[in-house]
Structures are given as C-alpha cells and as structure tokens.
Amino acid sequence: MIRFQLLGPIEVTRGGERLALGGSKIQTVLATLLLSRDQVVSDSTVSEMLWRGKLPSTSNAQIQTYVSRLRNQLGPQVELVRQRGGYLLRAPGAWVDLDEFQAHATTGHAALAAGRYAEAVTSLRSALALWRGHALVGATEYLAAIEQPGLDEARLTAGEALMTAELARGNHHRVVSELAAMVNQHPFSERVRGLSMLALYRCGRQAEALSTYDACRRHLAEELGIDPGEELKELHQAILEQDADLTAPPVVEVVTRPTPTAPAQLPPAPTDFTGRTAMADRLDAVLRAGGGTAAVVGLAGTGKTALALHVADRIRDEFPDGQLYLDLAGSTPDPMEPSTALAELLHSLGVTEAELPAGASERTQLFRHLVAGRRLLVLLDDVADEHQVRWLLPGGGKSSVLLTSRARLAALEGANHLRLNGFSTSEAVRLMDSLAGPRHGSDSPGAVRRLLAATGRLPLAIRVVAGRLAANPDLTVTQVVGRLTYGMQPFDQLRLGDLDVGARIEASYDQLPLARRRALRLMAIGLTGEFSVWHTAVLLDAPLAQVHDLLNALADRGLAEVSGSRVGQLDLYTMHPLVRAYARERALTEEAPHERGAALERIHHNPHTWQPAA
Image: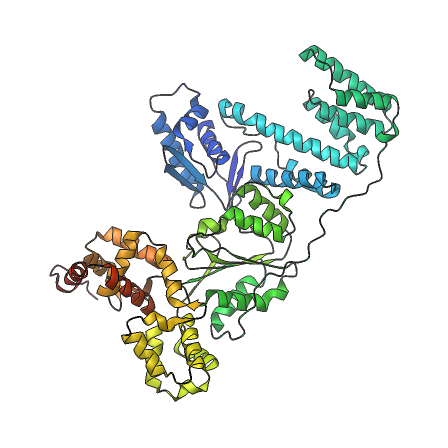
C-alpha cells in the first residue's frame, strides 16, 4: 500500500519504504494535487503555489518535469494525468493521513454531539495522534500560507472537542496539564481558556482557574484591545460564586444508536449449484483465512454471482462479525457511485445519516476504521471497474472481499483473479439433467452435443433451455437446436421469465463506444474460430495498434477472449458463440450490405493478408 503523510513533514511510503521525493518544489506539487484529489488542478494554481506570481520562463516545462518524476516515483497505484489545462491525481487505494484524521474527527464530533463521550474520546485521540508537528512541512511557504490555517483550525477544533468529551467523562485530572499546554499554543482561543479554567476548578485549583482568566483578559487587551466574550465572563463569575453547576456531573453516556448486530446480507445461495468444484475450492482457500481479496470475472451469464454466493455461503461461519453484500450495478448504464456505495456499507455497519461524512475519501477512511479489527466477509457484486471498487476495499486486516465483474479488473492490486468461461461438457449435461429432468435424455447424444455447441455451454443459456424443456413436455432438444441455429430470432429461445441471455449480452455491448460496437458487428460476420490481431486489422481496414487496443477492450468486457493459442508471435482470440450470434444479428440489421460485403472481401480475398508462420 502507498501512504501519504501531510500532517507534518510531507512523506510518502510504499510497501513500508520511504520514497525520496526531492526538494520543496516537487513536494509542493504533490501536496497541491493530493489536497485536491479527483479534481483538476490548473497549471496556474500549481504555478502560484510554486512561485507566487514570479513565474520563470520555463515554468510549464518545470511543472511537467515535476509531474513526470512524481508519476515515476509513485507507480501504478496512483493515477496522475493531464486534463483540461491542469493535472488530476487519483489515489483511491492509498492511505492519506489527512483523510484518516478527517474520518476520525467526523466520528468523534458526531459521538460528542450524541453524548457518546467514550467513543468521542477514542476517535478524537486517534485523529490527533496523526499529527507530527505543523502540516505541510517541506512545501513552499506559499502553499503553507494558504492551506495551513484551515488545517490548524481543524486540529484545534478536534482538540477542543476532545477536551470537552474528557471533561464530560469526569477526566479533569487527566487533561488539566494537556489544557495548560493548549493555552500556551492557542493564547487567543477563549474556548481553550474556558476548558482549562473548568478543569482547574474541578481539580480544586480555584485560584489558578481565576488566574487563567486574568491572564486571558490582559492578553486580549494588550494584543487586540478587546475584553473576553460573554461566555468566558460568565464562567469566571460562576467560579467566583462556586456555582454548583460547575461540579463534574456523574458520567451517564447517552446511547442514541444501539450496537448493531452482525450484518447478514448475503442473498440465498443457489440450491442447484453445479460444477466449478476446483474454482470454488480455490476461492475458499483465498478467502476463508481472512484478509484475502478475490475477483470472479467473465462474460455475462457464466455464473459469477452463483459461484460467489455458493462459496460465501459455505464460509460464512468463518466471519462472525457478519457478511456485507452490495450490487454495484456495474453492467448497467448507471453504475453505483463509490460515494453512494460507501454510504450503503456504512449504514449497514450502524452509521446514521447524521454521522455520515460528506466526501468519498472521508467515507472510505471511516469504513476502513470501522472494519479494522473485525472479521467480515464483503461481497461486491457486478463491479464496473477498478476505480469504482478501490474505494470500497477495507485495506487489509481480517476481513475478506469477494468481487464479481464482467470486466477483467486486471489493474486491481492484491486481488486473486479467477476467470469463468463456459461449463465443461459434463457440467453442462449435469445441470440440464437436474433442471430438465430425465425426459430430455431420450434425445440423441448428437442433438445434446449440438445444443451445447450452440449455447457455448454458457451456464445461463443452459439454465434457460433446460427450463423451457421442463415447462414444455412436447419440446425436444432437436427442435431447440433448430430454432437456435436456423431461426430468425434465436435469442427468443434463450429467454425465460426474468432470465434473458440476449439482454445480458446487450448490456455489455451497449457499454462499448459506437466505433467498437461496429467493429464487433463486422468481426461477427467476418471472423470464425480463432483469429489474430492481424486478421482483425485486415477485416476492419484499421491500424494494428488500434486493433490491438480494440481486442483488449473487448476482452475486458468478456466479449472476446485470448484463446491460449499462438501463431508466430501473435496471440489468437476467440468469440463466444452467443456473443457472435448476438453481434451478427445486429450486423444484419445495422450494417449496410455494401459495408458487410467490403469487410468480407478484405478478409477473404485481400492478396496482401499476412499469414504468419506456425
């Protein structure tokens, strides 16, 4: 994990090793971008933080150099990109001490307001322990002048809240010396003076409490020409009168939120789960011990969620603190935003709406804080991409995370990836037997083999076909094969209730840009079996580099696969039969005949098509 520290000297560590950032200019660029994560920071803002209007003639080149050096030092865990006349830094998987401080402080302030003083003390002390002196040490004075006051104010406010919670718990003896130090550090803070006076009075040191007030009055008069505010004056008078209300009250903490029971959110596991034994065992081994992350990826309909629920159900007893489940809607046009997902997870852990931090970074840190030390199983279903899910990872500890996604999630650090393809023949037949009953066994073995070939042994397709056979006693496997192979609308045969194979493939197809949709359509009519990037380039009449990116993008969505074979130095790709059938249907309705003809002409008759040696 990469760790950023801003609350003291600016430091970055990766894998426990401190990175040598260089001088104040590069540290300033990093701090400026970190303080505005996920927002574009303009060149002019960076320049102002570096040179405050006294720009050298090479300012843009220097900024580019600093950013390039940072990109090389920070590595792939941090995205640092050029965008709209500035730079954008994303580090969703990173630990940032400022985020941690804000999350603890938010929890502490909310607990104090609710009368949960012990919780407030724990959270606020955790927040303040992250400070290592003045913030942003190592940055230019311009950045410090702008950002330090706000950070110092947040630190002071957290300190005042901590002292208030400690006094409410009757811990005046514990904090009286801490408050004396705070008075020296913040001589103009009447709030700190008042807390110090109250602690002294409760410790039986009335004279010192009154002396603290006199010192404050003189300091304000000499430095600012003003008197103390009414609140401090009233406290001073109450001490003079030894008001009984100043006596430390008995500690009675208000509990406004019951301790949440262990969440148990897993949907029911499929009772007719079939096959995938080795894969289930592999997931079990990664997750059962705690602290593991596994990603089950593959084409729509391969049974990713079924496998995940099957494994989660069999290991649920290993996670006594509960199981969290969230559908991230990654395959829909409107995937769940990380901030919304974090709100759902935090609510499941007992965080009320009033206690919910506003920003995604703060919610992430609070989530990790609450999960730390617990043994939870977190199942995140239908993940859109790495960026969406990085915010939702607990960050180590005893909890395990199981992900499902149509995307490959190849850039997700630390995850064990398991790719699902179609069933084996024996698994497919076993599922058909369990769902369709023995009647379909009267069909010839050849008809069953042709049906499995037509469906590509896709688990969802087999489930739908078996359901149709079970519901229609007069329907035969041979008839289903004919309708799938020769029918005008084969995907009508792959729809049963809310199970719709075509709709699942369409959702992945619709997420492609228009140019890639068209490419997939042409590939479906022009390429068969295994094909290379070169064959695809000839078919599409496109540059090799562009086609290579295309095939990678299709593989990311499960719409193409690297077959495992090679010809010469080229990987060979395949397309699932149902993806090919769906894209072919779209091609026949959306591609003009002359466009289809031209593509076929190129792939079949181009004399310059290169055939690499085997």
